[in-house]
Length: 86
Image (tube, rainbow, N blue to C red):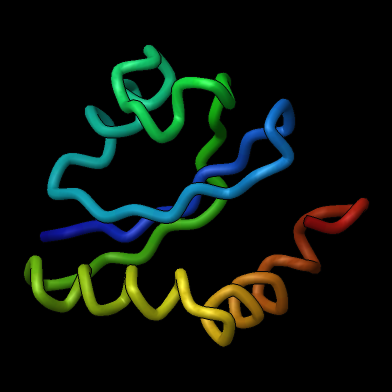
């Protein structure tokens, strides 16, 4: 199984959207500063995750979530879980 995930950094006021086969290890790498694109927003918190059957499905979903419509979808889906919004 492959995972598409969304991380939130309150420090950087940013989201990070990615995909991986090993979600736990990937989040650890992000929070240990081993990933160039996320090392300045530590700490990162997992706020959303979807499961895909294979790498191609997960990458396609990741691309969609990074698009304008995908970001709107995420904001709409998650707005009820955050008191102050995203």
